[in-house]
Length: 431
Image (cartoon, rainbow, N blue to C red; front, side):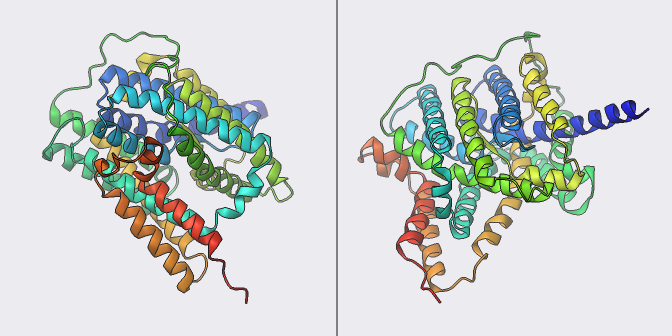
């Protein structure tokens, strides 16, 4: 009887983790597909590879890396980099396909830097740079930069459309309100799965209004994820500083996630430095896998801590099973194709709702210490320059060397590095 109970409990916990993994992975491939004007089969292929890499990355971290139940999911910062490189590439006459090959290289280089940080145990020396003011600035600039992309998707302006698509915009707005309403006002599984519930309701309404179900077409039942699906990686020396800066910024993700989950699991005596160093090594390997499989690079999602706290699921075994299951689904394109037919406005609406919590996290970090004259000045300069850079046309940087161009045109990187530098140069007076 005990075995049956244990099997049922493990099965239910595995399913809950699987839904969480799926909900956190499903939207960003659709957003990237719309951004780069990919066809439906190409989006389906991107989603297949993303599921495979997310499942494999989470599995490897759980058994070899930090060894904790923390999901590695598609990263918002990478959507920002994809978006900026797509825009600057078009301004310089670079086709989307060539930009995607450059992005493969960028992910692999970032993975190499992360691997070295972890293997050489350098992570602990970089951590003091990530003050609450730095992380708060990063999160807020990230939400500002991505909000435009998400709003365009909600209004049906991606994929070459120049005018607001009213029906799509209304359904996307309803989806946004459902996801937000469930996450705030409901409890238990309704709150925890608000994103996937909102996506399914919005998708259903979208099909009813448009009068047609998604057509998957002739898709193979079983297929291995393609290696270098966008083509062989292309190298450009300007990618090195972008990869290094991104690797340094990404360290904050793994630190925040490990600390948060450690606290919820009650792991007070763990060697946190060892966990973070091991996790950073595998983090680097996972970025290399994302580049190799032409997917979206992942980061440890600190929302895993919220999931564990809400459900009370502290065992690692169901998480490992769920990660493996998501990886296996990546071998079945017919299943992935149905999932990838989610309309872009619906996926963007769900993501927009989820980013509201990130704004709250940004504000809490910024206010972690009293906002004295020094912090207000640093914050103001970083916000004004970072956000201002986002509104500059990409062509204003076209005369600069390509090495500088890709960094300076990304307001997220510019603002974050400004606050890092000023925090280190303008030291707080000892009291």
